[in-house]
Image (cartoon, rainbow, N blue to C red; front, side, top):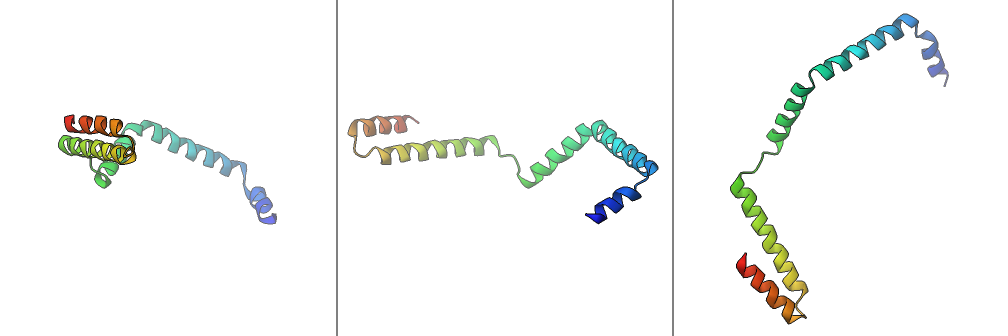
Length: 93
């Protein structure tokens, strides 16, 4: 507790003003270069996690749909009318 009090007592008005000006300048530069910084962040994300091609997206969607239908078929083993309807839907997809 005494260290916090001693730090607060040692801060002068000029040092506080300099700190406020420096933080204001950093904020102004961040606002000015916001589009550039956002673009750099998006580029970094694409380097780590590249975007899939249209074919890959279609294949993943079809695989997800097939897995969902398979789960539904497995969960509806007791009811033959629902299972037949789901099999018909799966054959159309």
